[in-house]
Image (tube, helix red, strand yellow):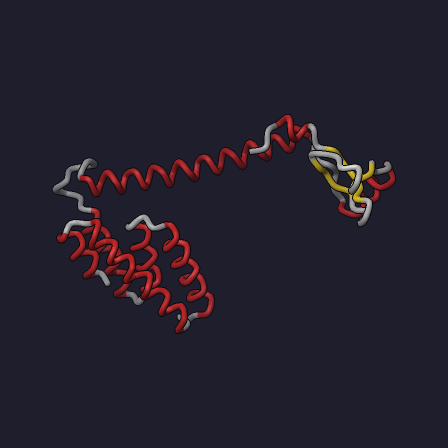
Length: 183
């Protein structure tokens, strides 16, 4: 995280080799020289921009940090709720079963021939971030091309098999059978 004092201490320099003008945190006399007012005017005239004020930079960083914090909090909350649901500590245990809910959702996806989305849901359910990332990319490529390549199909099948093995180890037999029957 960049501190406000770092933003205020940034220095506008001109690169000796390229002649480019930009901000740096530390002035390096071997690589930089102090830009002349004409150099600064030239850059702002060419780009139509001005150097953002310290207040603009601080506001931008504050907004970015706030959004990142909110996204992380939402992810943490969702993960916590899934863990509590699996442990039977959330809601009436007799009325909600996360495996049943998963089975219903994924069964609809597979019935609609949306196997890539179903695989992504399995990775999310099993809390495997690496598999989620890979399967989301496969789904994105599949949607973009309109068909699934042979290589992506093999990769998706391999990941689903790995996730189902993980489910067999971590879930009760009843929940595993529900999840496995979705595929």
